[in-house]
Length: 263
Image 1: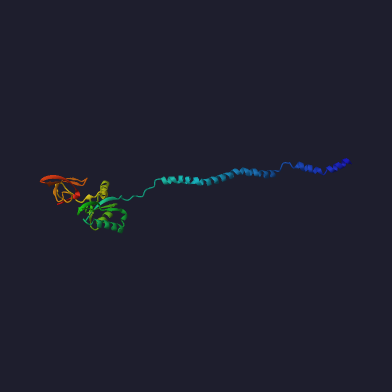
Image 2: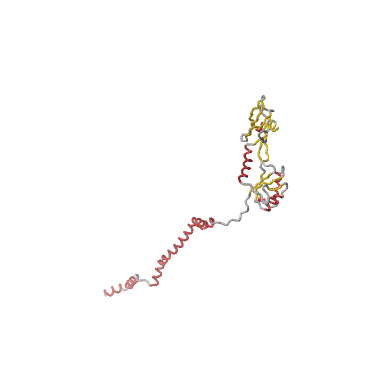
C-alpha cells in the first residue's frame, strides 16, 4: 500500500521530467533558419558597410573633390586654344599738314575716327612739341615750340580704307614716305621723339638756335649791347663763346644762349 501511494504521488511528476528532457532538443530546420537570420544579416553587413564607407568617402571627398575637379579641368585650362586672327599691328606714321593747322588736323582725325567707325584702329595722335625758354624784358619765359612744324604723328592700323580716310581729312596733304604705301616709323625713331619731348619739360631748351660765325648781340650781363661773332657752340651746356672786341682787341666771352640774340 505504501508503495502504491508513493507511485501515485510520483506519477504526476513524470510528465514534467519528459518536458524537461524535451527542452534541450535540437530545433527544427525552420527554427534553425530563423535563428541563423541574425547571422545572415551580419554577413550582409560588409556590403552595407561598403555603401556607408562609399557615402562617407563621397562626403569626405567634398574637400578633395575640388582637387579632383581641378585636376580634371586642368588639361582644358592648359590645353592650347586656337587664337583668334589678330588684326594688323598699330604703327606710327607721319602725316603732312598745312603749317599752323597741326592741332586742327589732330582734332579732325579724332572726330572722323568716331564718325566713320575706325576709332578702334586709331591709337594716339601726337603733335611733337618741346618747351623752350627765352629772355623777355630781363625775365626768363618758358613756352612750347613745335618740334616738326607741319607734321602730325598718328598711331594706327594701316590699310587702304584708313589710308584714304586720313588723306581726305581737311588740311592733310598726305603721308611722309608715301606713294602707294606709307612707311611706318621705327621704334627708335618714335622713342627719340618721345624722349626729346619728355626731357624738354625738365630742361627747357633755348628758343634761339645759333650757328658758328653768326653775328649776335649781347642783351644781358656785363657786356650788354656789345656785338660779336659766334666762335663755338656748346649744345650740352646751352652756351656760346662769342668773340667780342674790347679796347680794340678780340676777346672770347662765354655766354648763355639767353644772353644773346640774333642781329
